[in-house]
Length: 446
Image (cartoon, rainbow, N blue to C red; front, side, top):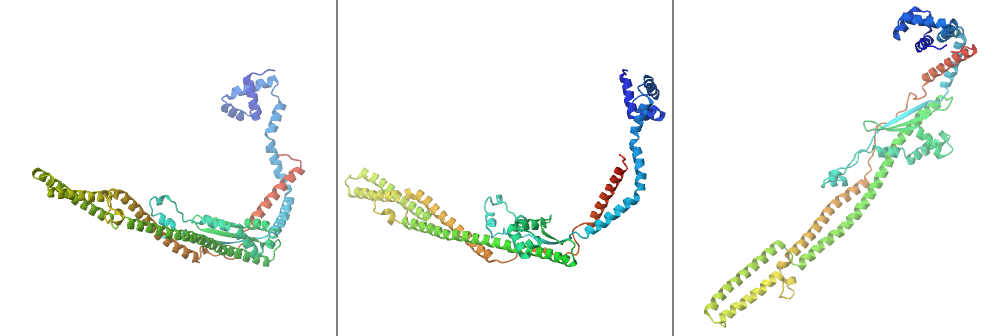
């Protein structure tokens, strides 16, 4: 029989809520929920019964599906109550086995050390400190945190192999080779940088299965000694690396220092040769004197020209006074040329105390460059001398690089295993397994 869409909707509601067929309260609640009246829903259910679509078997099967879970749960509770003796017995056996297990498994003891990392030496005497005083020196970043380098040393193969050889850990870990021992040691150590910037070293050592008291004492002592050894060897390795770095730094600075002595001597000799060649005692004063001498000569020449003009108007051209003035002007002109261009006298530039005016700009620039080179090499000499002495002091310095804030102590409490947690987990698993087994045996499906 073909049903209308409305009747199909009512049939779906009945399949979801079978109680609405015979329960007026449930029917009223569902009708209100889906926008029907209780009367409309009741009439539609009656029509479905007339059509034969809704019969008692359908209602019964649907009701059985709806109440199946509730029925099973109700049956499970008394079933488990009847099997309580078996459940308790099994839990007791599991508890005994678990307790025996947790007291037999190895205990792990942990010893820790807390270190204060060193700070980078970036004071005023170091290269970075000196360079920071120069222009744009602030663009060069500096850091005082060496935590990362300390962690790198702690995790290095070099330090791990030292620890393995010192405490014969290949035999302790039953490792066939050094690589297996390195993995075992890495799994039992932890190095962390805390928020305050300090570094922690933690070493775990486990006892044997079914261990006696002597095994626990050995584990406690071994983890403490290993933590102390890690801290000591860290300081030695870090100190060795810093000494090696200081030695390389000292050699580099020393080589540059010796080269600077040669360069400074060359610059000073070049300046000396230039001053001797050009009689450059004081260029500014010498140039002023030359200009004054040239001005005097020029004034005398102008004065003679005036006298000559006057004499030519009243005297004969061959008059001795006129000849004397002409000869005087000729000599003055030669002297003027000598001052301006250095010509007219053999080796004038080498013998004259005054610089040639035409050469003054060129000589001035060359003199400035030579003096600047001397000043640069002299400044570099002062800087390198300071650095060289500081490098020698650092190379010879033998102070601790790492400060131990908290020394490792022998642990009194184990760090593992968590016995109570293991017992709770085992009992929970046993309880769940018992319930499943009882349900399986009773062929009851949830």
